[in-house]
Length: 195
Image 1 (cartoon, rainbow, N blue to C red):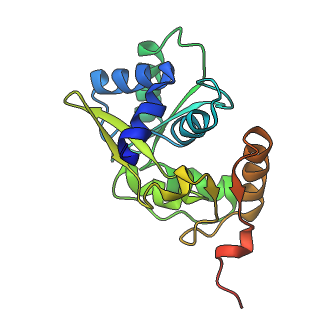
Image 2 (tube, rainbow, N blue to C red; image 1 turned 135 degrees about the vertical axis):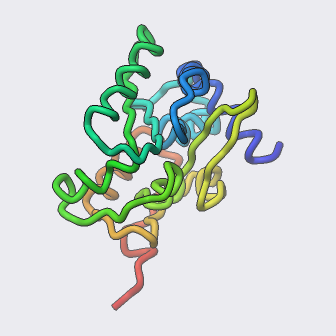
């Protein structure tokens, strides 16, 4: 089976992913994608025989709207919450155009603006995490700026394109290793240029 088909099959084995994708398509939120843990961890669950939803803390939605006001983002969050009421898990909805406004205060480093929601994927701490799905016209589209090799080999490696933070990478990798002992975690220094 082609990796893209396998990704979709594993992701949709988690019924929450299917519900979120359908809601995003119906709501027609600009540039909306289901991203991160709920996608790549669904694949890990499928590859290791774990039940759908195992280890998934929340379901992340990225979208892109040039209106970076808090009120505009809050309105989209409320629309998603209403459409997904009763889903029984946390859905986090974030306008990627707003990230540069709050990221420096939260993480102590700048965050350059992005042109669309999927550009943010290229800044994830590990390439295996940088995957998103959306439904459009009845079919599933995939965004994976680093490809799918690390995802399917269950390899967690630092993203050379991001500047960290290292402690966040190490904390996330440790949590994932505890839940999916099959993954291979490469140290922070393994993909970094050496001085």
